[in-house]
Image (tube, rainbow, N blue to C red; front, top):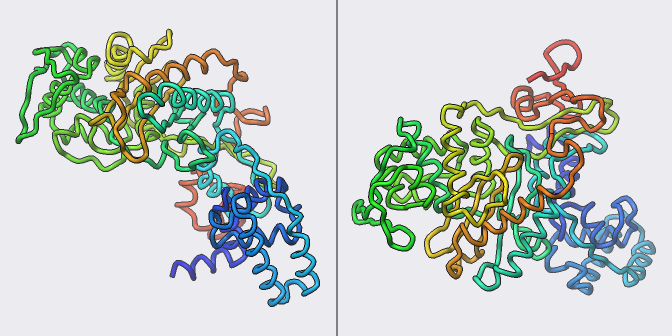
Length: 492
């Protein structure tokens, strides 16, 4: 039924076009593959080049012309023979194309900065473009200067400190407090692995999850000066231990958070109730499955870095939940108007009654807690996190302008050599923040609401709300067809 509906709505030609623009051929989409293998725009390809790309569809890794030139050549012959058999080209044309293939010299340009971001934003850009004819120009939130800094800092850390401590991968995402993603590094090397560890990897957040425990405590009426017992605790045979095995007795909530005391945090979670801890996490935007077990307080339920970082952004913004976004505005070919996209959801929870205390907790971590290694020398607030056996290490926090999350670990879940959130992740976070602050960026580069044409703010178009409300919605001019009269602007 879905196939029939798609063909009725789009037609075979549009379905094929969308497929060819999104299929993976060593790069995402035919146009990108044309650029990588031939350094050409797709409309500049000749017959044998086009046939080679068509041949890649069946097994792009196996017949990649850079690694398997002969295999790609043979596949091209199959395509040319099929074209001749189906009267798409003549036999002489097929023979000429076959003869010219051996003269081709595929090239592989260095991947452009921000490739993980491009992969993440691509589905949203496709939704914005819709089925409009011609091209759609999309302006994103990515800041090239910050992206380059992020890639450089991550690589330097893994090549240096990471080598000695057994850390082979890291991920970093930077956003403004309202969720506009300005830099995204999904791993050590995009060319070697396109797997996005910011968006797709689900890992245990360790003590970074304690933010939600203490937020739940504040909502329950406790204050930062109230005390909680940091002592050995047994819950149905489970006994969490503090790092180092030491306990401090009665401590304030502020000290327990700054020192990331496990026993005290578990006791606090039991006092306020695990259901309330889960509700607090949901309120700040965590949407991953959360197990209602005592170990939840120590971050044993897996999350991804993007979701966790946007939850911390809620604290800096003072409203929740913050949803990460990457498209500022778009303009379809032939359309005079530029439409602003921006965040497609508005935070509806006011955190102002608790924001000051939450900021204070996170600031203490950097000033005199487990996150001292992240101190960039200016205002900073954040939280360290380390999962069991040092398999994951995190630092998530913010300055005045940027919210940044860092994860370090190994894809095979192998333990690292004593790496904690206050070490390598905190150092990556600190170095990024220092360079990002020192780097001169264009005026208003983080003011993602500005229109690109200098004519003032573009008219907003809520693609998500409009497409859900009107089946006839057309993104290219943000209009829908009412029951009578001409098309109307969607004002959702």
